[in-house]
Length: 323
Ligand code: ATP
Image 1: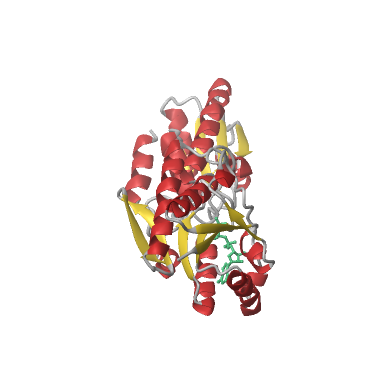
Image 2: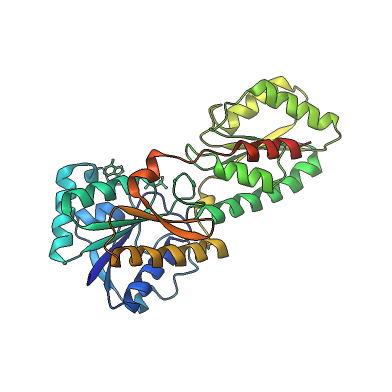
């Protein structure tokens, strides 16, 4: 294999730049040229490919976002769109592609490989941590640390005013950011899509917390929770505990930005390198992911079909410690 491409797709995640750098440098060390695709699959359809030298990826390791840009592409959902993308790849004699993104991006990569015969390898890059075949996705650790820093700050003001704070965090239909930031932040309760929310139970929990002598409450709400978001949860909880002085904070896109943590940088280095190795080995339609510290390859179609369940043990731990 002489020439490969790399692209970032779907929602951006901290660590994507570090992964691009790892792909380029790892390929360069093996005498393989790397072409970067601007704006994900949309850029592939438009033929926006350019050569990335080892020097071209200097100084990006510590930056959030993605130097290649990302996009969602409706055109890539069509066979015609993917055929256009294939033409551009063939023009440049690209033999393999590293796709850094989430499950949607992997579905697109799978379709492209089947139709074009060009090998694809996925690197799980999404803050949501909702992909099977890896312990953690790239960007998750940074996003949780960002949420955690905000929770620590909100605790200061919650304690000063003896208030309840309802804090909404990202994750789409996944509750991993919420659960981890709630445990690490010592929250009173966490609401996640993986467990049905009962507002009466939450109201009891809040009452109990104040009866136990707590001076404030922190309730972490995953954006995909079935109760309808932090404002709605706060409104309904406020009806249940009339004397509750409360505020709502939605953390939003700050969780997507910022420099990647050490963990995300190391993960990016390992997975970017492993993706190139997989292509060199002649592998196709696989995702590389870290499981129990080993880097393994998983068929792409498993990455979205089987979603690892949120462990009850962690939800129970959260409940036990919140007293
Ligand atoms: P994240 O969940 O972090 O936002 P993602 O990769 O899941 O990342 P999506 O928006 O779901 O983000 O997918 C990114 C792009 O992948 C889509 O805009 C589309 O171009 C392509 N894609 C998604 N699903 C398919 C599919 N079934 N077939 C072909 N292409 C797809």
